[in-house]
Amino acid sequence: MLGSEFIGKLFKIGELAELAGVSKRTIDYYTQLGLLEPVRSETNYRYYPEESIERLRLIDALKKQHLTLEEIKERLQIIQNQPDAADEIVDKIEHLQEEMKHIQEELLELKPLLKQLNDQQIKLMTKPLAQQGYTLLHTLAILLGGDPFIN
Image (cartoon, rainbow, N blue to C red; front, side, top):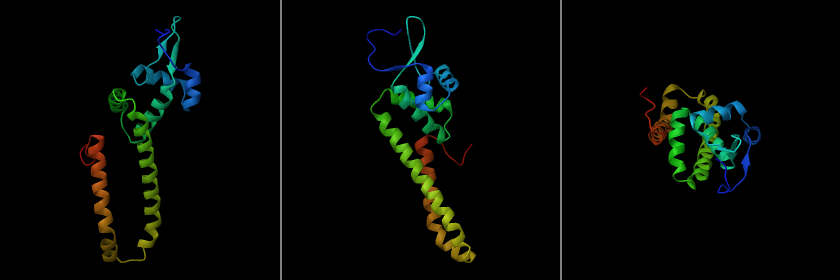
């Protein structure tokens, strides 16, 4: 229940949706799943603390990593125990996403150049890249709690 002990800005569901760039329905769904935690007014209205905006950004970043909402919920519970880490985690995930996007673009630029080589030259030139890519993929999978080669 919302009381005088709560300090900080609170948003109605529509305000939060607009600020975070999501629908009210999404906020309702995330609330039902326990991903967002509103505070209730004396008239039982839901208000969301300002931190909910950052939490929605983190959820979005984790969804882009193909985590399920249940996995996201588990990670959010860990982060909730270490609130100062949330901003840093979001920043690092967004940075990694940008880096991966850049690598994809570089690989697409490389593709037409490889057509100028024969098969043996292609294997010779791309073997270190393939090995490094495999290692990176495996490291990422371990970090995120899975193995990309096992379903």
